[in-house]
Image (cartoon, rainbow, N blue to C red):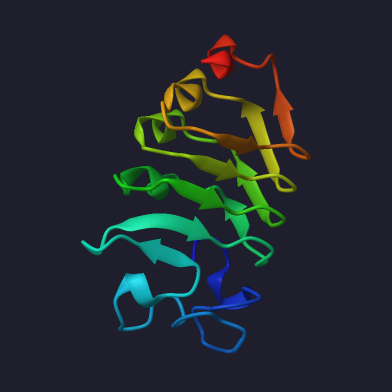
Length: 136
């Protein structure tokens, strides 16, 4: 469990927490039925909403492999590490990662996501300057 899935507040991979708007993570059902994940009609994941869920550990870089991902809402957790720049190739509209313990510089590539409408990254430990591309 890369983000301590057995200790999540809802949709725990162990199934111990019943506060879930879908099936528990890593269950045998389709990922589109797992609580906190949203999919399009083709069964492709478009949203990850796992805010206030006791996620801890490195930010899951695997999210960049979800080619239709438009929303990442994982605020108020214990995520660490950096934001991978390759998230900028996704059709992201919302990235909400405030109140974690993320560090490093904000990747310039992130702001090349042409559909990006909402970015909420406060209350982390980022360093450096805000990339000029944010104005695009």
